Length: 330
Image 1: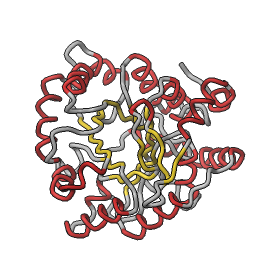
Image 2: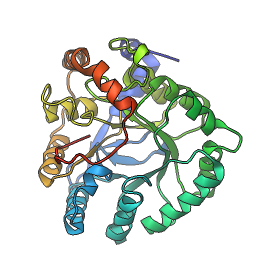
Image 3: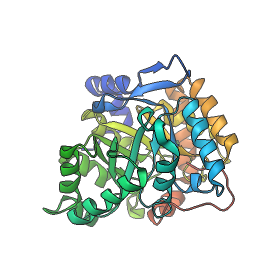
């Protein structure tokens, strides 16, 4: 299934789903806009707190805790981590810092193995580090190409394991993340019974692992995988919002964050290695007004024309890791 963004928005049923995904209420205590995360029914903040390499750049744990608590106090409740972030260090920090605030948040983690036994074993270690008996969302991390898809779907693969964990309610909801191949992600979303997905959604339309398949604006998550997820009423979150900072300075951080939040997603998950970036993005979220569609098209076409092929090649080999300069990355 492949539906262009224009055709997608012009289809009455899917347009209705997009409008539902965009509907927001403002939390009366914090002023943070909240959206429903698809079929989970849970309201989450339109700004998500990424706990990957950017959060781990706070080498002082007190500073890392300060950033987390500042986000929570501002109304951010979507907290995103993974086993691979610092080889478990991100999960360990969250387990140490959250304490009684655990029930305030939507806690999502990600797990990389593709075999049933490995998923079950490593997920138990995640729960121990997080000091909890469940996560709200467990993602199969970083879907790659066709071979990876086959491994996940194998009779004793990761999909069978996450189904089991959802049945046992140690993972209340399950999903998959992908930033390299929208066509492969669309295939998995069509075939599997998943609740959520996180994909590369940004103004540069970045995200395609096949250099020979890069065709201007068509081969991107926004046009290939996002319509599939919305048609199935899945909870969608955006990542790579700033494309690892590579869309700057051709666009401002505010333009890029506003673009992502203007898509039919529940939350834009961003890594913020400095408090000033966190404060900036909280302000953007709390004053958010959707970017008009003509402005979104102009921005995406300009950035994609200048950047897409180059950055798609970068993401084909990308592994989330610290950026030594400490800039705002998403």
